[in-house]
Image (cartoon, rainbow, N blue to C red):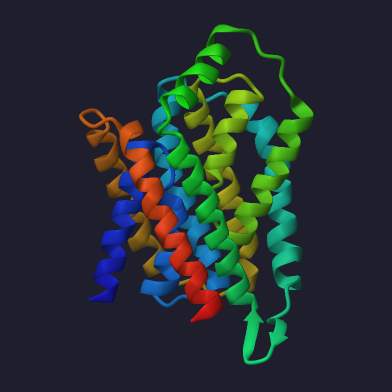
Length: 271
């Protein structure tokens, strides 16, 4: 029964990606940890595969429409991939299994990663909820679309390194950071930013998963089933997006992510 719920959740992950252009991948690690009882460090690696494969479907769809800017993907992606490599190869293995002991509470590597992931969910939810503001959504982006933008490459490289760190640590794509960076720092239009972001997420996720292969035994059956369900979901989401305004649903999904992130944080640290 729990596994059935997990597979349904994987479909929901894909639907959210197809319908609102992001957010769903941030649920992958909680699904793996709480519904399939995968150890958190392994779950972050598994998440990279599911997120990478699902994002590649969306990226290919945007590429066919000419909405993927490969130059920008490389400018952002190269430092991001470098950061993923360092994080998965050196930083994650260097984190001790027991980080801190305070009375009866033991901060383990697994608890630390899940708490960090919960904080990331809360930050992402804030971005989603705030995107519901019409003022936020129209004024800055319209200005960028109508005026030439000087590329801020140093900031893009820094953002790429940060996204790589997040991807490597917690297995999330980091689209809530990538898309604003592509829009405000590189001047891409929103649809171009989404397509390019999916391409960057695909590259980061697959690279991170490959780097992690020498550190674990992979349950390919589970990964392929979850990825298939998620891909089915993204096609459903893209079909629904023609009838439903995903932008209106994004704040609602943001509140759901906020509740989930808060629950995970409380569960890992206090229960």
